[in-house]
Figure 1: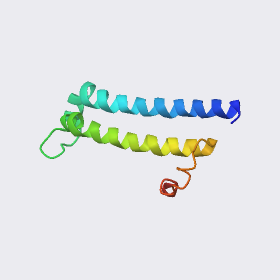
Figure 2 (figure 1 turned 180 degrees about the vertical axis):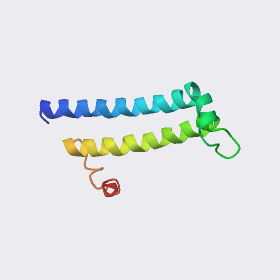
Figure 3 (figure 1 turned 30 degrees about the vertical axis):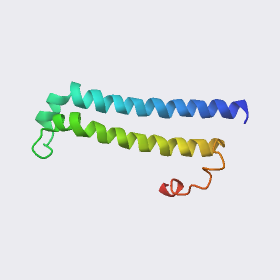
Figure 4 (figure 1 turned 135 degrees about the horizontal axis):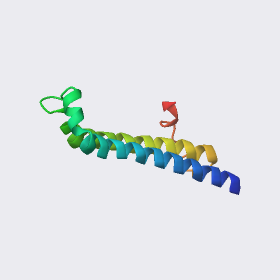
Length: 99
């Protein structure tokens, strides 16, 4: 690995990580706490629960799990692009079939 490739890989890792953390922050804090009352008034209820309450209880957890899956897929693609995969993971074709 050249140092230029390593630097580009590290920068791309930081961009992905900061983007995922930003989305997580907006969903977990923003939807659950800061905008809960607005969402209760302006969004449709989920079942018998107001939308803001549902986001605080279930929506943020679902979003977190989806962000974990997204992070794993993006990092796999990034690692394969810059040649950081070991031989054990090179045979995984299921993630590449998502493209």
